[in-house]
Image (cartoon, rainbow, N blue to C red):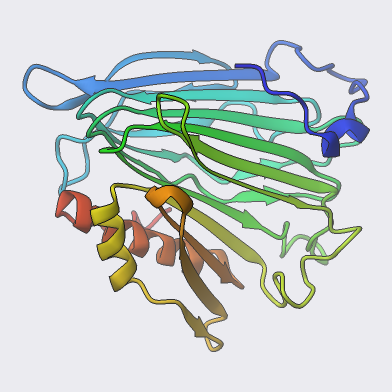
Length: 304
């Protein structure tokens, strides 16, 4: 699927002088397909990977769901740089489940000519279950980043998808808070018959309107956006047990809303530091898993 370039990225179309767009090593592609085997275990049945996006073998370390594969997406190229184009296509076939994450934070390097992009396609067939919790995205000075996530999901499937964005390299030299050029992030979902469910898009240009302003991220440095697509019965119970809150002592706040068309929930978190935000996102993921799979999310590894 080829997506038209959004108008906000048109000013950033100059070719990088060192390595133009399309140069080998700058066009990463990853395709993962999960399905059930004859014993009822979810497996990574097929995959295709083009560097710098890579995966290794699926691991089964989740003691609560020992039949669920856990896969880490890695990048062999370091930070995303000027002109990088990445695509990921992840499919869960009927009844399959999987947990996805990244090996480290996604660092977006300084860009002078072009931009970096990530296009993701998530297909969840009947009764499938996916937890996708990538590590935070860190935009450096003059970053230009385009992220587009397209979801097709069956009514009986469940998706937990989180994105965490930092304000920049907060502790680098004298700090790089909100010094990137632009972040354009779009998430949309539909059924397999093309019936639309929701679309969310935010475009942040700090030079035009600072995210530090009141009503945006006033005083906060970390923003988490969590999408939960699940049947209405699950969504109702998750909604009833999840409360918005504001903790000025920890510098943390969260809120929850319903998505249109009875397709699920959206959960947003603001924080001053990455650790508490990640912990809150994992706690919410655990609540979702308890509702859908009747098992909690294990504690995060101490080195993560």
